[in-house]
Length: 140
Image (cartoon, rainbow, N blue to C red; front, side, top):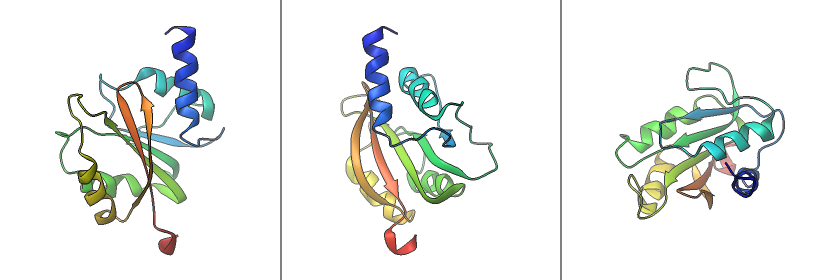
């Protein structure tokens, strides 16, 4: 990666609200994920992300998701299982026009069914957008 791309990845990862020492679980890793974002996340937290087999509490779940990955509600329910109180799920989906793009209304429908609410959407990487999902305040 070039220095400019590295700086851009760090800036995008910084928008995820991560803090040093946070435990971040990565789910849905495949060859199409943004490696720059992954490295920047690990740089912020000061450790490697844990995978879906991790069996303890996590602060953040990064869920890489594509339209043909299956049932989004089921994936979100699974993602919140290990999540700490006040934890966050970042749903990372391909941007519009990219293979595997997930329609915003599909996310808007799936999140509340899984017990989550959408708070914001960011450009997480050149080919990926990130949707921040949290438990509703009444449930916290």
